[in-house]
Amino acid sequence: MKHGKKYTEAAKLVDRATQYEPAEAVALVKKTATAKFDETVEVHIRTGCDGRHAEQQIRGAVVLPNGTGKQVKVLVFAKGDKVAEAEAAGADYVGGDELIPKIQNDGWLDFDVVVATPDMMGVVGRLGKVLGPKGLMPNPKAGTVTMDVTKAVNDIKAGKIEYRLDKANIIHVPVGKVSFDEAKLQENFDALMEAIVKAKPSALKGQYLKSITLSTTMGPGVKVSTAKY
Image (cartoon, rainbow, N blue to C red; front, top):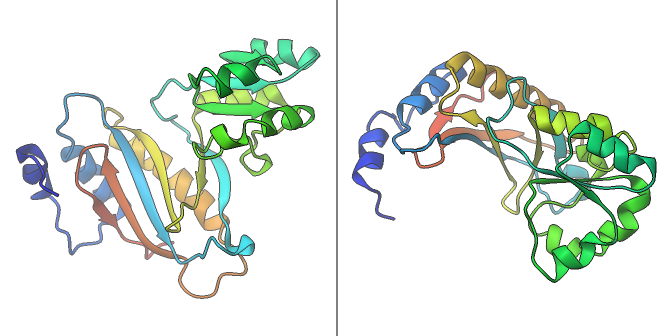
């Protein structure tokens, strides 16, 4: 893959053989951002888990203390008095059965996170083929299937992110924007790593965290030392 001039210049700042301490990595990743927009800072964690085994799956959520820097649109599937509760909490869209054809047939996906009350999962289940591949299916482990829609919406709006293994057993998550100062990015990174370390499957034998890489949307990867985790 051929990279542009800006990427090549930014990549020179990074020593590929070095595993940087988290604070150094955060400072360096900010320096490598060259795009004209406010790039997202992402963390990529390669684990020693085998996601094909249910007991080695990792899935959960964590509220980043300083948010993600992104305005998140929340869709809530609810009925009865939970509709008003979701609206009061600041959900962008609230509904039930009537949303199924809009999503299934019209391809409406103008939302980032889906929350559902447990009694609506039968309805939401019909959207599995659409929401599943996009990682939008509500899940109790991620706190998105709940009767406490106020807390769910508030947490998401405050900067709650979901993490889980992809097919290659890697976790990819955003921890903020390049415009964040180093201290805020560091706090978000620490909160994420604390949650990931706690989520270690008890069934796992061998090394849990194989590598941690920080990068911006368009920038080169910066390796983070796994020693302290």
